[in-house]
Length: 146
Image 1 (cartoon, rainbow, N blue to C red):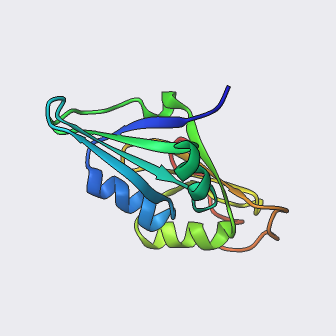
Image 2: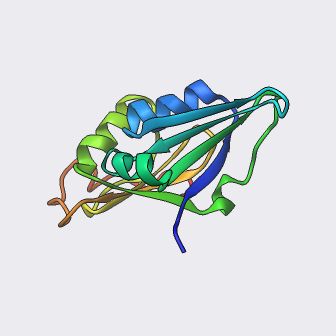
Image 3: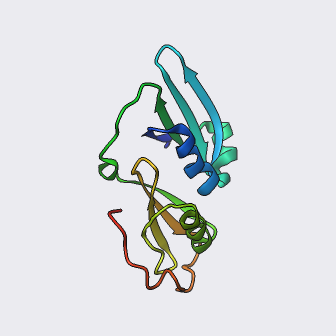
């Protein structure tokens, strides 16, 4: 058995690509447009998985954008995506500076939760050992659900 991808439906492809690529740092590895089905699939890979994605088309995140407007709800019952990151504090600061709410701040230097523009929980885990606790994260309260 081999993990291939996780699919999440997105309501605004540009906003979602900004979140996943520009802010989180994932890379677009391929895109498929389907005129008949009226949808676009965009496959993303984490930088450290990019070469493996090219060889195996896995592991990836598939963003599905349906051209006809739909309203999505229930992102929390999806569960969450999880990514190991090089510097948890720096990424949380970048996300926060770009208007992303940190739902569960990285108080422990090890883990944080944020949400995508479509309400999908994204867990961020520090690579290696936890970073030493530091402000403003230590005293920051949780915000919303994660």
